[in-house]
Image (cartoon, rainbow, N blue to C red; front, side):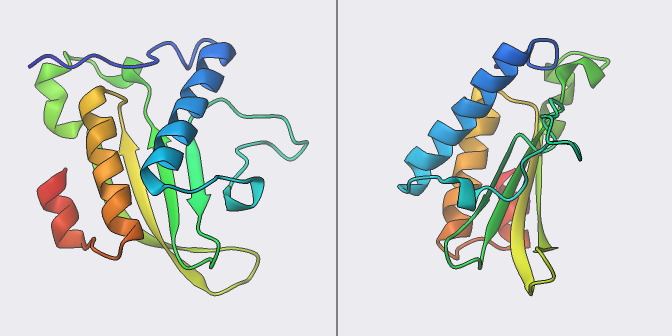
Length: 146
């Protein structure tokens, strides 16, 4: 089945980028059943002067209140694909577990998801996030889900 890229012009239009970022916030807030705050955002994705960077790396970050789990979502630009979406379907999403250190604090386990944004990859990402937050995600399970 042909997949359709969502917010495909985000890298060319700051308004679409901001809509895309809001989409992720709403999706994750709904899936996690929590209110996202400025404190739950790890990276602001801005330069040293505080100017917003519009590269979607990351498009969304989250750390739970206890600072025991983090999530980072990286959205890739469809323009880097040289062939059709169907030929690259198995490469539309990848995920892995990592650790992140914030302000010289202890290492925090992090779920990293890199994807091209389609309805199918969003569904897979939301499933991974749900399992991660509920302590049901392992590297082996990631491999079977993506």
